[in-house]
Amino acid sequence: MNRRLAMVAVLVYSGIGLCAQPSQTVSPDLPYLRKAGSFTQLIVDGKPFLMLAGELHNSSASSTEYMAPIWRKLAAMNLNTVIGTVSWELLEPEEGKFDFRLVDDQIREARRHNMRLVLIWFATWKNANASYVPMWVKTDLKRFPRVQSKDGTNQDSLTPLGEASLAADAKAFRALMRHIREVDTQHTVIMMQVENEAGLLGDSRDRSPLAEKAWSSPVPSELMSYLQKNRDRLIPEVAQVWGAQGYRTSGTWPEVFGTTPHSDEVFMAWHIGRYIGKVAEAGKAEHPIPMYANAWLVQNEKQLPGGYPSGGPVSRVMDIWRAAAPAIDLLAPDIYLPDFKGVCASYTRSGNPLFIPEARASVPNLLWAIGQHAALGYSPFGIDSLNEDHPIGQAYQVLGGMIPILMRYQPEGRVMAVVEGEERSQTVRFGGYQMNITFGGMRRPGAATPQPTAGSAQQPAGPSGYGLIIHTGPDEFLFVGTGLNVTFAADSPGPRIARLGTVDEGRFEHGIWVPGRRFNGDETGGGNRVMLRGPGLAVQKVRLYRHD
Image 1 (spheres, helix red, strand yellow):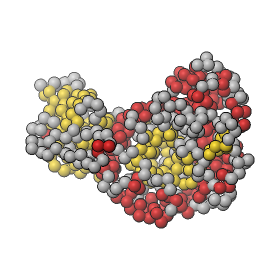
Image 2 (cartoon, one colour):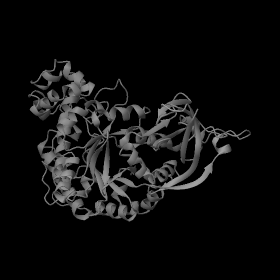
Image 3 (cartoon, one colour):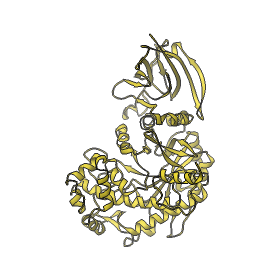
Image 4 (tube, helix red, strand yellow):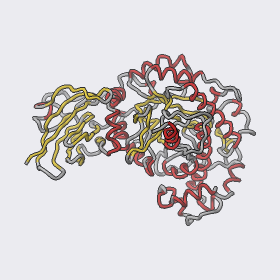
């Protein structure tokens, strides 16, 4: 690919087409998103990259002194990516005067510790309010109007219909991205999160004069065109709200979408999405790396908009966000809910790539996201509070060496996850074999029963078995996990009986297999099963054969 075509590819894969014009030539080495089979991969330095990440606490990156010992700790936990923060109030404490020292410190230290950075732009929204905007914004309610309640009370968030607010936010973000372009020539910063958990709490819709005027005005033609063009492919929740009014193609917001709380949510999603999309567009004009918006999720099926941030990028309004914010490459869930699998499934609809910027530090959930949904990355929140010996660090060490393997086989659908659910056993069909999986460690006779640890009575037990299965070739598999006991049966034409040929433990370093012991006898249940036991993730390379 010549340099001109490479430049075009970066712009196209970044989701902005050729509309944004950067102020200087775009490097063809910029991180970008690339379609790979039915999945999307993040390309860094020309190669697919998996973010084994952790997100810092909100205030950690505001102090270089505080962060000084944290970087070594994060490296010891085997992170290859850190999600840090940039707050508008510290970047632009006086209007037009920018201070990039904290940004430079994060880039320098991440590079020194051989890690990549994802930066969060804490600006107009942080958890549905405006706590991170500068004082010159907070104190000027006339220039930067607020969301209002029905009685006219100003709330703690800026209205997304305030054009001066949008202009100021976008100007600051553009300055940030210009600075990153200038100082980060090694592309340490690989993605940007634009705002944080945007939306409106306490009501389903903004009631300020600007919002009331917009509510009574025609729905923008851009949104109506998108809905009509994609009517047969819309997320069901969006189709339901629009369909309740007979799929009208023009009219005011209540005429087209009705007057329910979910109609209000569509209205807010359009205006918040438009605002954040414009901020992202301004940043990409300087440095077009991938950008995403994250969501505070709906907590239960009975919760109405306003109980969670109305208008935020929850999965039920992804179509509205796509129409409003084409410069945003993906929508990402912050997952703290028990139904981790369900949330992942809801966010991979319509081809949305999965990235989990905030979650609990759960190895089973990490493997599920990677194995079932080819997630771009996984990131426990508050990573700087975890101990260095946390299981997530060991899992990152194992997976870090396997990134080239995972990235090679994901596009071909040859990576899957297995995680214990309500049943203690599962049967999966994969790579021409039926695999019967029993979860939980198999103790030898006389082994002591593990005793509960402190606090275990207050917390539900997690899965006792989980892992990845990678189909690397005919009759060949990699198993990565713990608490898995697997037997095999033929599930494709040919000889009927399946047997273990060889089973080797080992590890990967930079994608290269480093063999350990050859397992047989006791380690394979007399040659009848693959057994992966804890603590931590084990890696076994398995070769099968068949006969009659």
